[in-house]
Image 1 (cartoon, rainbow, N blue to C red):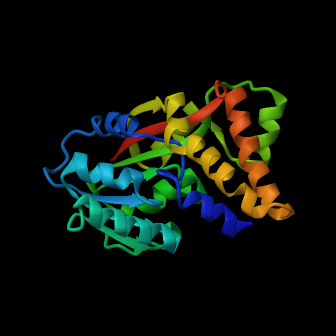
Image 2 (cartoon, rainbow, N blue to C red; image 1 turned 30 degrees about the vertical axis):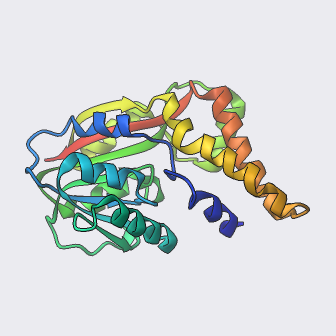
Length: 246
């Protein structure tokens, strides 16, 4: 099943909800960065946001992911996009990063901090930031405190630690950061670069797995998530959190 999941994810423009406009909006909240900042992109996937960061920042980016094929795709896209000298792509686990202390002006992580737990991630990564360096993350959160039982039960299974969006703010303070800004990812950010490409890929490869019950289960899981979002998106989404090291 995991192999099929990756087969689908490797073809997507992004491995989670997000888009250029949201990235640019978040980046504009960062003041006082060097002209050519050093940036760490954690859980970069195939690098949809990595390439845009290279374009908008004029800086140098170290992009890491623990899935080797994602990194190979990013390396290929980096060369084709002309950012070969700006982006270093590495296969590395975010939980065991061993960069030198105070190596980066900005740590960027879209939709991946939950692998460590947001509090653990922010605390662990702080050592790699220079004084007054920034962290920008997107995190799956509840947008309303009350949600229908069906969607609550779904996320109790998928992400039981999911928090109400404002409950992240004290986590940020406790980890030693100042909250600079927050905004919710627009609904369309889920579709153009994520859900629509997933639907298209499933339609494309489903005939190749006819009669394969394990594959059918994978496809059903994807479609369940997509239909859940289509029906209940007002209750949950991704929040962008921009913070600065204190």
